[in-house]
Length: 169
Image 1 (cartoon, rainbow, N blue to C red):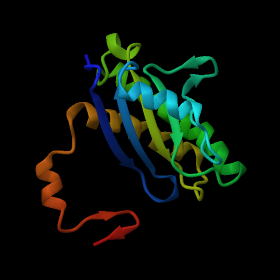
Image 2 (cartoon, rainbow, N blue to C red):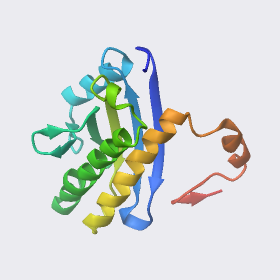
Image 3 (cartoon, rainbow, N blue to C red):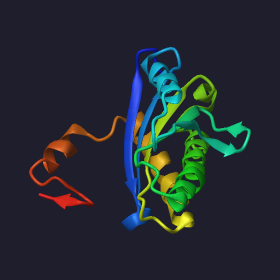
Image 4 (cartoon, rainbow, N blue to C red):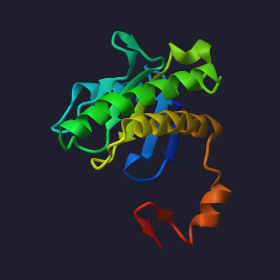
């Protein structure tokens, strides 16, 4: 069980091109700092960024209760549909997979809250890939958080040549 002041932070990047998923997760108890951040984010939407509770289907929120926070401002109808549809379904599925696979204990799922910060590229077009990549990335980010990844040795080994899909040193 996660102690009240503890939060588990995870990160994952899955896929290629515009349909790639970049997920950051923050998992913790509702009576600790994660719960405070969760409620504050839900209560303070801003233009282009409207946090909402992720659902497996309407009326069936995933557990742990997951706040979906879009990192990219909604850039039009298609981007909004991919964000609120395919990416949201992928996040909900990835959270449920993490519980089903024991990454997050089923006995703790109702006692925790999760913030999922989700990148959906405005250039994305393939809903099936957006869904699949977000599902995989969410599960992987939760696993990384639970396992305390990355290892510091890996970070130090990579420090001389930082790289991401948009830049390589």
